[in-house]
Image (tube, rainbow, N blue to C red; front, side, top):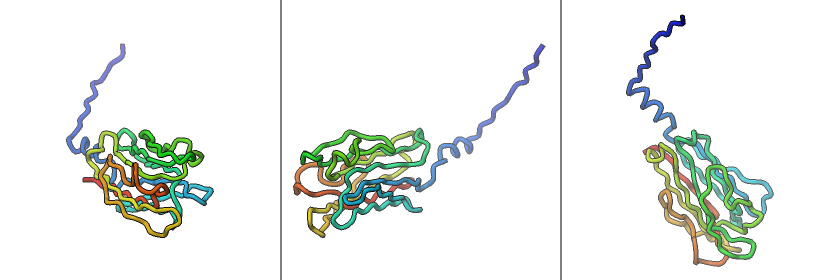
Length: 179
C-alpha cells in the first residue's frame, strides 16, 4: 500500500508581489524599420531609461516598421497600427499588429512611406506602465521637419489624413516606464 504525505504550500504576500513585479521599471524594446534608400532594416533599441529614438535620415522615410519586445507576452506586450501611403499613392489605415509583426504586413513592397503610428500596451501588467511617444514629420525634398506633440498610448502620432501629399514620419521617440 502506497503512503501519501501531505504537501503544504505556503505563499506569502511578498512572493505574489515579486511575481507581479518581475518586469523592470524600463522594459527593453526595439523598433525595426525599412528606411528609404537602405536595403536592410535599421534597428533602434531603447536605452536604460526606457527611451527609444528612431531616426530616418534627413530626406528619408520609414517604409515599414515593427515593434519588438522580449517580455513575457502574458504580462506586457506592444500592439501598434500605422497609416501609410501605398504604391498607388492611396492612404491606407492598417489594422492593429502584435509585437514583432510588420506594418504594413507585406513590408516595404507595398508602402512608399509611413504617415502615422499608434502604439498600445496589452497584457496583465499594462496598467502598471506609462507609454508616451512623439514624432517628427518630414516632407519631400525638404530638410524642414515638423514636430508632433507627444501623445499617450492608443493615440495616433503623425497625420492620419490631410496634410501634404508627400509627408511622412522621419523620427519616432517612444518612452516606456513603470508608473
